[in-house]
Image 1 (cartoon, rainbow, N blue to C red):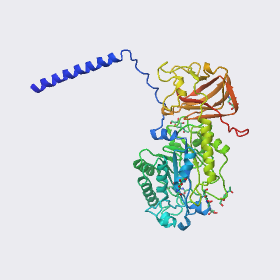
Image 2 (spheres, rainbow, N blue to C red):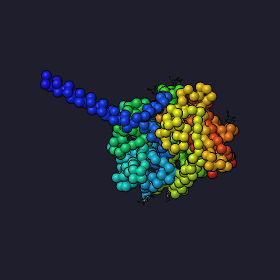
Image 3 (cartoon, protein in one colour):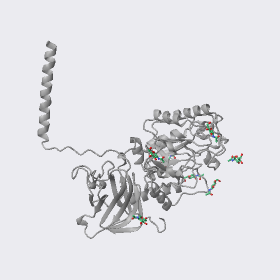
Image 4 (cartoon, helix red, strand yellow):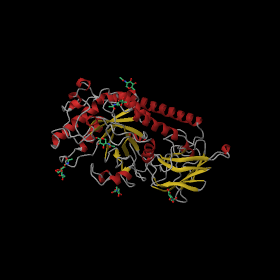
Length: 498
Ligand SMILES: *[C@@H]1O[C@H](CO)[C@@H](O)[C@H](O)[C@H]1NC(C)=O
Ligand SMILES: *[C@@H]1O[C@H](CO)[C@@H](O)[C@H](O)[C@H]1NC(C)=O
Ligand SMILES: *[C@@H]1O[C@H](CO)[C@@H](O)[C@H](O)[C@H]1NC(C)=O
Ligand SMILES: *[C@@H]1O[C@H](CO)[C@@H](O)[C@H](O)[C@H]1NC(C)=O
Ligand SMILES: *[C@@H]1O[C@H](CO)[C@@H](O)[C@H](O)[C@H]1NC(C)=O
Ligand SMILES: *[C@@H]1O[C@H](CO)[C@@H](O)[C@H](O)[C@H]1NC(C)=O
Ligand SMILES: *[C@@H]1O[C@H](CO)[C@@H](O)[C@H](O)[C@H]1NC(C)=O
């Protein structure tokens, strides 16, 4: 009884304390109105790792290995390890090249199709251990990830499934065991790995070999929680379907993974454009080399700046991440001319997008979810943040269509906007929605297109001037959520470069 009595008493005291607390907080916020919740997601939506990856926009690839020394793109697997002897390999120099290009993630080819391993794998003799480089005690993967971290960059790795050297290739169980063992080495020995690349490439005459992709993918996720897996069909990031670095003008982040077979021809268009009804969020990555080949060849040089910018508009500007390859040479350095081109590219992107000519303008829209103060106002597209966005009301759009407008403020009287690039971004954390859109300046159409996604860039053939810029969303999978609308001046637009 005594125990029960004291329990009742303490309950009563607790209830009194709670009611005091509640009335105290009511007193402090007598008229607080509840916030409007965000709209529901439209599935599929990205994982946190995929979102982080998407916002990187530019990442870099380093193809370096036996092919660098044999002047080839695809080795045979019979190369003598003694050929691998970079005289002055310096991975920090590679990182400085990546930073100059504006990249935040760097991916190293740890093993290409020739099977030569850039780290001293315990499971093969065909590696840097058998080379004269650093007297056989070197480890390019270790030097790469350490240099990346020292420069504040994240690291990723490429491990070719096709291996022309290993004798186990063609024996399904033995080879898959070998491959799994190497995944373990790479994903447990070098700290955090942000992306892993599974290339579907395979020679026409290669032995028929079934790769255990499902086992590999699950192993990768077990060993690295926040990694993104790249392959033709993801599961996290997909190939864009070409090696030019161009996405489709329509580019959905979603696909049906079940509709894709890794390494199979004929799926390029599907990969390039995605699927508006796709069930899986697997956004595309645009891989392209700054030179003709993936590996370094003395007879090749870097693409001109105009071409790199064209690639940027057709990848980053079409809802993709650009994976730009820079091949170190036989000395083990990225050529000075290539570093200079990467720096020129990084500076050009900064020159175009570092200034938003829409800053300071007045934003209004066809409607605002929750009204003024609701947190989803049109002006959110101007605040430079990815996590705030304009959202219309649910009823809007059924009537006249959705629009958002930027107007020069009164104090800028007489001075119109003048720009040749329009940037539109969706808040893709809640799904990719826009199916068709158009841009008008003072009522005249200047650009239109289909998808937007993380970022859509319209590069106009000549500058336009006007006081009002309006973006219409004319078709969509759900109410459009825009996190940014920006106006920029691109001084590099050359006649005919369109
Ligand atoms: C490696 O490259 C970096 C960046 O260019 C440079 O600062 C450093 O001195 C180089 N290290 C060696 C050993 O040459
Ligand atoms: C592939 O095999 C065909 C027929 O055996 C042969 O003619 C061709 O040279 C081979 N190609 C390569 C790249 O080995
Ligand atoms: C390769 O092997 C798989 C599984 O054994 C089989 O289904 C496929 O038809 C083979 N492909 C060729 C080209 O022989
Ligand atoms: C993808 O899956 C969705 C839902 O099942 C379906 O409506 C759509 O047609 C599929 N796309 C393709 C290309 O099969
Ligand atoms: C440069 O040389 C390599 C190897 O000899 C060759 O494969 C490649 O086609 C050449 N590149 C150009 C642009 O001629
Ligand atoms: C590799 O690039 C570095 C930096 O430009 C240069 O010093 C070196 O001579 C190059 N090596 C070769 C073989 O071209
Ligand atoms: C869309 O833009 C193209 C040129 O880029 C133009 O030919 C077409 O008329 C525009 N369509 C609309 C509906 O404005």
